Amino acid sequence: MPNPALAQDTWQNPPEPIAAFLDAPFLPQAFISPDNQWLFTLEHPPLEPLASLAQPRIQVAGLQINPATYAPALEYGYCSLTVQHIATGQVNTLALPSDARIRNFRWSPSSRYLAFTNTRPEGLELWLLDVPQGTIKRLLPPIPVSYTHL
Image (cartoon, rainbow, N blue to C red; front, side):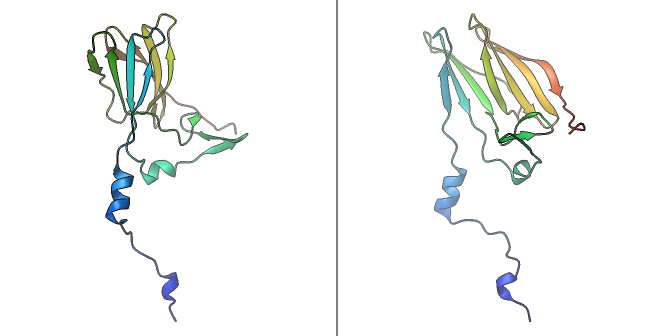
């Protein structure tokens, strides 16, 4: 005799107030350059798809590492970067890849350059922003990492 409590339920969407809350954009993050000349605004991507959350992870000493990228698992980064010159108010939205997940920001000593990584399925890319020029370029293609030794 079939048990209705064990029946497979179909996917159900949440009620509208909950769906609106889950679909609301994240608040942007902002930080100022070390020389106090530039304001940076970073936007989070929408919620990650389930396939991204289900990727394999290696757990080492309390850390969760993505074996495809050798980067922390479940850290998704930002999808857009806007630069504003504080004195003039001039705003520049940088042209990043459509699926960008940028993080690991590091400044040059002069605050002219900002280096960051972009997480790709095949590894991490290294990018460089020339802040006064408002130009970015990829310095290194995705660096694959093999965990066959583990």
